[in-house]
Structures are given as C-alpha cells and as structure tokens.
Length: 152
Image (cartoon, rainbow, N blue to C red; front, side, top):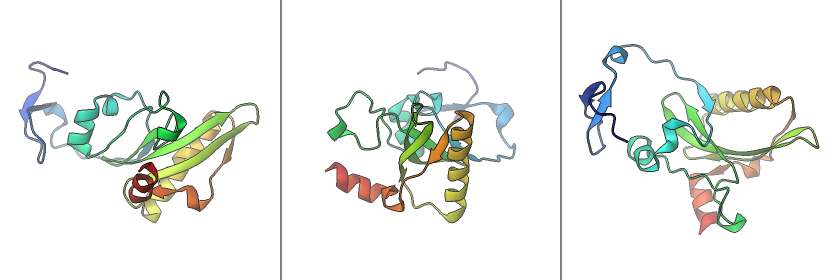
C-alpha cells in the first residue's frame, strides 16, 4: 500500500524499505494494553508488512481444510502493548449460550501479567457477546514450538 507523501520518512530498525510516520505522534508516550484484534484489522491486513514489522505470522484460516489449520477457523490476533503475541481460537456458540475458547496460541511465552491481561480481554469479549465463557484446559494453550510441531 502506497501512502504517498503522508507523514515523514522513517527507518524501522530490522526492516527493509521506506516507512512513513505521523510526526505529531513522535515523542509522545505510549501506553499499550492487551487487545483481541479482528482478522480484518488494518494492523495485520498486509501479511508481509506484519511479518516485517512484528515478526508475526498470521493468516485467516476459515477457507482452509480443518486438517491444514494451525490456529483455528477464525483466530483473533492478540496484541499486548506494542507486540503481537499470539492468536485466540474461539467461537460463539449462541445455541449453548457459550463463548468457547478452543486454544490460546502463544507465539512467545506469556508472563503471568500477559496471561492475566489476555484472559481479561477474553472475558470482556464473552460479556460483550452476552455469553458464558468456557476456557480450554491448560494443555490447549500451545506455544509456537508446539503449534509448529503439530502443523508438520
């Protein structure tokens, strides 16, 4: 995506290419939080850019056969602070009145603080959907290493 002359040219350490930043946002403090993103969020829309900037590999898998899915039918990317740290595989089962979490895929090992923040976001989403929350057993929370092994 070409943004033309918007913003100022910037170098992003570890990334190729030319980037642009909004100068009004420079030198402002950043306070991140945990958030569950839509698979259509603009932050992750451009897969190559997401890999370059965040080292985060994500692909919507709803059109893949079940056996080829790594993260789930409609996995939600998990943002924590300024990092993309995992994916949430969950589904709203309206018939049963449950927001069912199948797995929390950790691309990096979650600290206790990260786990608490992500669980709070999951609970908030279930509440917003007006559904009871059903969490997976701990064995379903998989690291990147485990997910990669399962995908091969």
